[in-house]
Length: 477
Image (cartoon, rainbow, N blue to C red; front, side):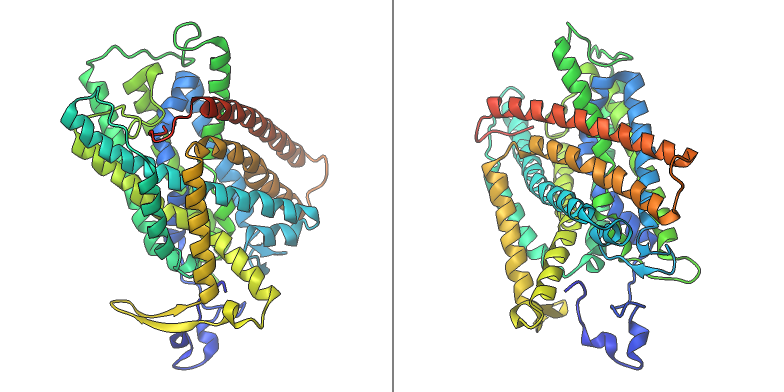
């Protein structure tokens, strides 16, 4: 169920020429496609909210948090890349999922903990992306309304029709059989993420250069007694730290991305993945720092939560429209990057549980115009369609779910990004207990646990406020 079986792969000679060492169809991915997957997963529309996060922390804390968490993510991701094979990172047996890697090196209940954290996080992200895409499309409609009727017009629009449209498109895209077939969509999504990031950055630079407004910025961010109360300053600071920490994470799909990379005796998968990680994280950091700092310079302590959908800018309206369309297209691809591991997990489990059930295991060849032969699996069609419908339904029922997503992020950041990669590395290298390296790795683990806990507290407080202020049929920022 993880690999599409295509008869053409087995023609013209020895079947083994078309198979990898594990008997699956040869992987064709490279560090380039892996980088595209990473950038698609990491650079989300959240890059446009980093100006708000920097505004809470100021010129000192904002850049420091961006750099520190980029380093932590890169470091732990390189450790996890070595866990793709076990027991040897180059010649060992492949681990196809994050759970497989934890099972190979740690075992026990940690496997179930990993699966719970990973798949809850992936489900939450897909629901959140459904909401965020609808917000971007509503912003297009509102932008045109503001341009026509003035910036003080109400221009209220429901998100629900756009959630339905997004869900319908995802039903089609979800029939892409596996991660290996997803490269073209990730590349398109990556281009879109660069497009709207550059637009947001360009508009911020233009605003700074114009110097039309008196923008207040400080070394420590929003000022108590002027911008916020004392308690608001604390909660916002904690939320900003959590937002920046979670903005880099892609560990929940790292092993699945690495499983698409082709093997080479010169450059094994872990080296290719480390190269892709370096490119992905460094590219992300550059964009985050630029958008965060320039955005803060443009808006100061009054930075909106998202300066494209939150209307930090009104003109040129056509450019704002284009940027929001780019966000929606990017999220179409990002949804699949996070959904495919979940699809593969359920389909793999069902095929092992009921190997003789033809509804689950059989594939039918269907000729598609302008595409060729597509192999349809009825279980895949029904299960993935049902999943998309359910996530879209949850999004329509809970349009403030993005606040809850912060809580899910807090719960999964520590185990998936920090704890498991470090514990796997300790087990893999048979590191001596209480050695210098063991000690500082444990300190890093506990420090990140504290970050997760305080971010979770801030997310709960923000969720309570959202529930109290919730108004249906209105754009949720």
